[in-house]
Image (cartoon, rainbow, N blue to C red; front, side, top):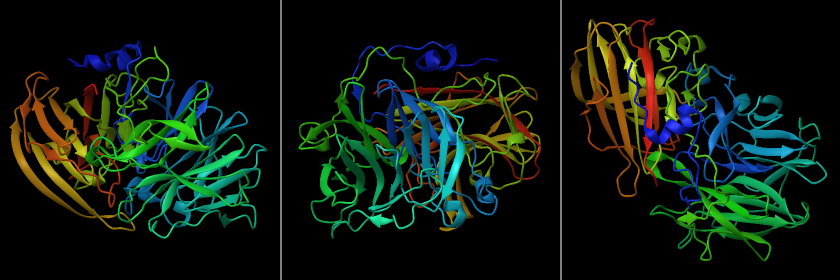
Amino acid sequence: MKKLFPLLLLFATLSGSAQVNTGEPIKNPMLWADVPDPDVIRVGDTFYLVSTTMHLMPGAPVMASKDLKNWQTVGYIFDKLTDSPKYDMQEGTVYGRGQWATSLKYHDGKFYALLAPNEGGPMGDTYIFTAPKAEGPWTIHARLRHFHDATLFFDDDGTPYVFFGTGEMCQLTRDLKSVVEGSLRHYFNREPDERGLLEGTRVIKHNGTYYALLISHVYAPGRHRREVCYRTKDLNATWEKQTILESDFGGFSYLAQGTIVDTEEGDWYGIMFQDRGGVGRVLTLSPVRWIDGWPMLGDENGKVPATMRPYRSNQPETAIVCADDFSAPQLGLHWQWNHNPVDNAWSLTERPGFMRLKTSRVVQNIFLAPNTLTQRMEGPTCSGNVCIDVSHMKDGDCAGLSAFNGDSGILTVKRKGSKFFLEMSEESVKLTDREKAVTDVSQKVVETVELKLPKKSANVWLRLDGDFQPGHNDAANFFYSLDGEQWNAIGTKNYRMIFDYRRFFMGSKFAIFNYATKKAGGYVDVDCFNYQKTAK
């Protein structure tokens, strides 16, 4: 079977070797992909970053870097969440809910992660996980009341605190399993024109001073989304305030929410995210200049720079989105499932070198399909294609590749009796606000072609190209092939991908799917996922 792997990713993904970064500048966005709500720490010579992935499983990805340029996913805080059947897409969904804004800490030789799903009741409990190393294994240490966008903080004497919400904090017991009675309080009050929440709290201590970093939403003339900082030398005293970043960047609006982190040499960097439409919320890197004891982000003009000098050179080039030939015994850490997977409905061993996706329940649309396999899309442009053996699909089965979001552009191979058809469609889901239950899916079939396939090893190649360059309207274009070499355009030209915080609340994803509309039991074998991202 022919497998086509772009040279850009052969080195890091398949051969085990890697290209070496020779010291080229770090270009912003540092990660041009959906990596929101970052927390970043350094342990020794390694930086660790955790981000929000909500309804995707495994969840709370941990990424590592030596140079703040090349990142790779090294683990996840949890494999599944099981507090509700909604995580299994039963009795509703958790689109846009699930894990949010995880806090990552290292204390006394152990890693800690604190997260709270954006839910009510027990589903919204705050989890504290621990691990001996960032890669895991992670175990649940405690569950507490809900803390919104919280950060865990250990003082110099080991006393633990949680900072959360809009200027709230409390002390935890030493075992981290309960709140110290009477310790809950507000440590600041927002200004009159800060009518939105101040959230995304991150807290550090530097030179004897406590610093709390938050995003501030301001609705006043000449005021913008910004990153603010509160500081004090005594947790029980008054906190001072300063705006530390108020910058647009790259043709997009103002950015904020993130943290600052130091190097072994004592330099400091700021990592903040920016909303960038269909690709999601991307990460930017800025220098930190300590001015009058304040960590001011940006260049000498207070702006996010287009490029940064590399922190460290001669590091291997790594990536968080990767090609895959599915030859490894375990699923690569670059993949996430849409909701909890049905474990017995996928396999890497039943046909070695292939990802087998089986239908396990009857559903009528991709938004309820279990075992949909996803990766982020990236800017400025990217291209992903899959080779799928569809010969074991049953009548009514649907399999393919999607630019997946609340509004999705979808390439679907459909089996109708003994015939196969390929459809390019535009589909949009409606969800209830509370249960995130699917109430309606609108579908516009743009183009359909009948596929003339052999009965055995019926292979179809599907390709999706994404363009997130400023001014290009987050365009997706779709192609298919019957030999993996000659590509045919199909469907909507420059389909517009969107970001919608009311539904999925994340950037568009490559999604490989297979579901049954009539009877479960069919399957497809995915031979490979080929991927190429253009250089910045």
